Length: 157
Figure 1 (tube, one colour):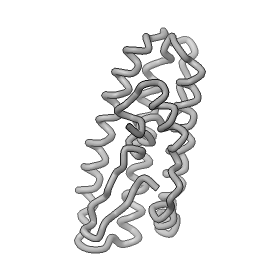
Figure 2 (figure 1 turned 90 degrees about the vertical axis):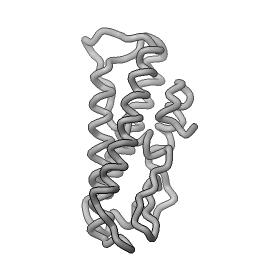
Figure 3 (figure 1 turned 180 degrees about the horizontal axis):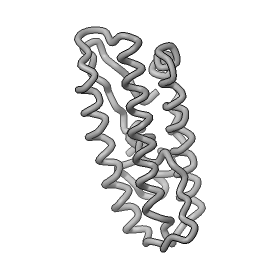
Figure 4 (figure 1 turned 60 degrees about the vertical axis):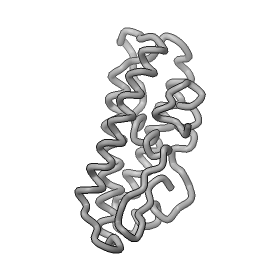
C-alpha cells in the first residue's frame, strides 16, 4: 500500500500516494470550457504538490510517540482519503483538456476508485491496519495513466 508507518510513527508517503490523493474524483466536465493539455498538466501538478503538504500536516497532527495505535492508523487512513477526495474535486473543476480526453477520464476514474478504496479502508481500525499492511496499491492504474499523460508530480516518476 501507499501509506506506511515506521516505529517512530512517521507516515511514509510514496509517490503513488500522491497520485491517489490527486485524482480521486471523476472529471465531469460537461458544459465546461476545455483547457489545453499543457495548462491541465500544470494545474494538476500544483494540486498534487498540495497533497504532499497536506499529508505531512496530517502525519504531524497524529503525534505518534512509538508504535501507532489502531485508532491512529485509522485517523491517518481516513484523513488521507479525504485529502485525495478533495484533490479529485479540484481536478474535476479544471475541466477536460482538449487533447486525450479519454486518457484523462480513465485516469481520473482510476483515481476516484483508488480514493474510494482508501476511504473505505479507514472505516474501522481493523480495515485500516489491513490496508496499511497490504502490498496492493489502490492507485496503481491511476499512477500509470498520470505518467502516460505527463503529470509527473502525480505519477510514479
